[in-house]
Image 1 (cartoon, rainbow, N blue to C red):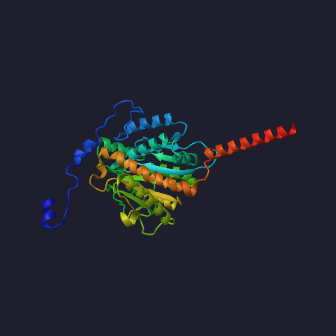
Image 2: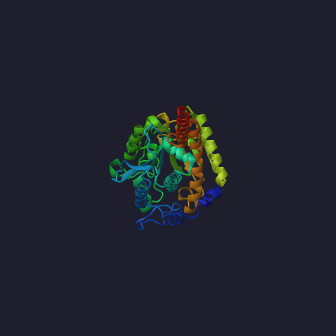
Image 3: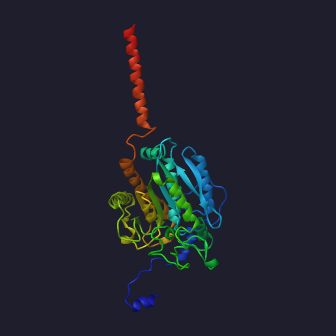
Length: 378
């Protein structure tokens, strides 16, 4: 290949000298090492699915005051898909922010980020004023791993597997690209009807169990959903709808403003530059994506994150980049949430400090009135 490129005077650069070395290095923990604890859980490593299942159980048990775990659906191989609902209990109707990770099996950093996100908002739920207020007025729905079968397959068989593991064409090939399977101009562009393709869109829109499960959850919370976030890698991008056309979404300008503020915060933290724009404009044409589908369901903010890196390691992002990647991504999201706080949440924290202060003033005035009454009546 090198000789051919040189003969044709085509410039090139080898970005990864040994892919297998990266695979071996990033998947040291292929087997479970027994029971885990949240205190010892290492968020700077990639974890296999059985460990993640255990971690999810520990999270729901330790943070039961604010977390509930729910069954989303099951995969073709009969594995459960779970999601967390995170928010302070409230009698009032709350906004919803939904986030999924691991829709593409090989994108391990996305799965690592969902775990990082959960830890951070839970540990800060009382001390951080913004997160505390968000959890009082917003319910976060977090799916740590949507494509469970595919994710396990990347640990056991083929590290760079992308799709799910449903049999196609009578079992002659396997897997559908779940992010080409949604009913958003399904399979019109940037997807393939050939089942061996990595962007195989499936036999029909929403044909896959994982897709059906996510759509069902969407429908349950759609009337209150304010934001949808789907986490991927790589490319260092925050993508806006749409992928199948260059037309902009109805609130494109607002989405772009929020995303640009977010990437400014990312750059401040680790001097890492991300790019914002519509999928079809700054990446490529594609159809049937979850974010485009969400936008067409009138979800106001629908973003696709493409995390580190920009091609040097690709899907084999080394574990030593988990921490900075998650830190900058969380910083960007907190910037988005701060905007939501400013524009879409109630100015006073229901059940929080403002109510307490108001109650104190009421009690003080009532006490003063009683004192004055008794003073003049005697």
